[in-house]
Length: 190
Image 1: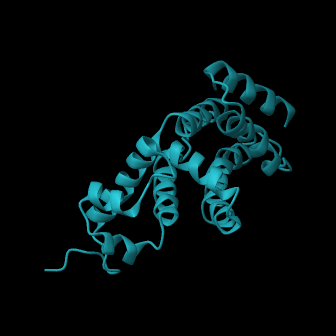
Image 2: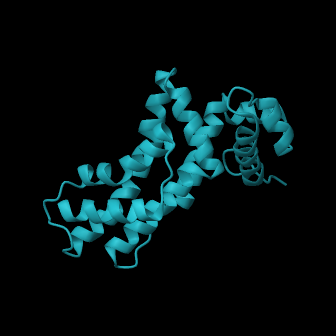
Image 3: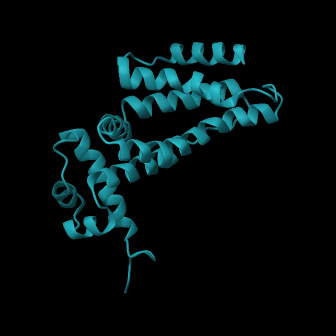
């Protein structure tokens, strides 16, 4: 009996590989992460991984995209301020303390030396996250809480940019107070 999906991949094996890659990256770092190690931790054959993913960056990109789609979909309580604070707090934890955040930081660092990876990270993954980040603002426009002509791209930049800056550049803590003040200042100026 065939247990894989229509593309020949077992969902259980796929998830095991993604989880193994996340965990090993956190434990060993990007440079010491190997396909062999991922295969051993996931309990799959190395050839299986190579059939599904050409390189470890492909595994990490899929792991990051899967985690981001699951964890970074914004809430919708009808209260834009509360939803933004909740979403940005989740994003801050995702970027700074989760295994997925470690994957993102590693991919971002590696992309500084690999233009093809940088393009894929932007085009395939960050674009999808930006669309999720915009959802909150689009709902606020629909409810009349933000002007219809509000520049949502700039507003997203103002909201999430400081989080990425702290997570990737300065290493400063992203406190609840910082997020609350950021949301308040951004909504006041929009």
